[in-house]
Image 1 (cartoon, rainbow, N blue to C red):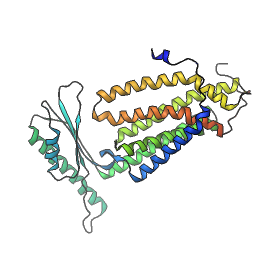
Image 2 (image 1 turned 90 degrees about the vertical axis):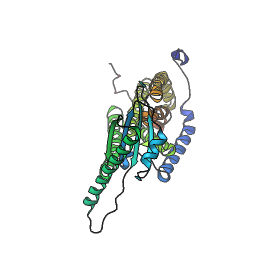
Image 3 (image 1 turned 45 degrees about the vertical axis):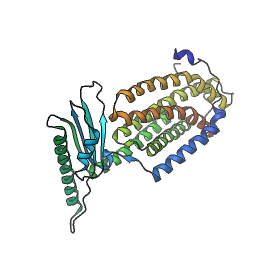
Length: 327
């Protein structure tokens, strides 16, 4: 039914809309950078350190009582989230306690201070477990208990940034080898556009930014690049076929040729992600929302950023020496 709603041939003049899209993208990027500089990301335990405990029980768990019991220990900020069990057999909650700060002692070196901080983290974990056992009874199950220290969290931030930068760099090389540098530059501009606006969205919404979100960003980079490559393939084919037509017309024709495929891919991906939002529970919520946002912004950038960008790079028009695919 959905296929019938999308015509096989469309004639939307996307290139004429590029100035409006440019203004929108510029506004979103500026707003995202401003939000990152002023508000910042809401880093989770993975990146700022702390204690995470996941506890399950056969009986309903009162989130308020859990928050009060752990908060009374004086361990700092405590967050309690319900974890949905799809099977419905158990009630589960996740308790997140902020990193325990330890002030350096006079004459103490950094290694000794870090060691005492790790001990404080372990003591916080033990105290929280004891409090939960006293509140909920001995029949509860501790599904997961983890402690992330300051050193590990700092390394994770560094590695996360390196992973995203390497992904962008490898995409740059891939497109450069497959097409030409003009295509490569357009694709990278679109990818940076997607990543910056996604980070800005997380800064504004205050959704927790953790390792799962890094995975989502890398997935968004791949998804957006896949959309862009599909359009670029058709652009290259049409440049060979229509050597005398204006580049803007060739771009419009190429985007319209692939529009049905782009929309169907986005819609089917969105359906899968919506099911994760509904049934995936709190643990997957941030990752899923990031992916939904990424599908929207990735599709937009492939059509309104990557393709029109070729108009500014004087892309090669003489393909007479390039053999068509399959020849």
